[in-house]
Length: 145
Image (cartoon, rainbow, N blue to C red; front, side, top):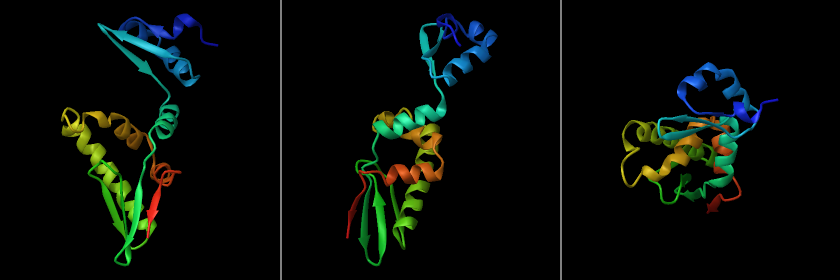
């Protein structure tokens, strides 16, 4: 079992010397931190973080049947997908999410109108396509015909 003293590391050197302890504590679900100069970092299991983000950040995805096909989008975001069927439109939206995450990390991170999308980008980067599809299809999916 991890003790209280091996969950919080007051320097990069201490964390590096006890990297296994740091990762074991995070894996076990303990609040685990690393201080570096005047900044504090939290170390979390990626799967746990993904699950929490998926729960706390519902997609509010909208799917619309139109013109013999389907369109999907996320209100308030410049992302959409199109396809011959709902699955195709969702796959296209997932591709758009992946492209957006890449663009966000490359250049949109500090743009005022994109800065607040850290949680979305983190969710996308920690999810596989099946998990993203489940997130999009969550209880919040609005389907218009």
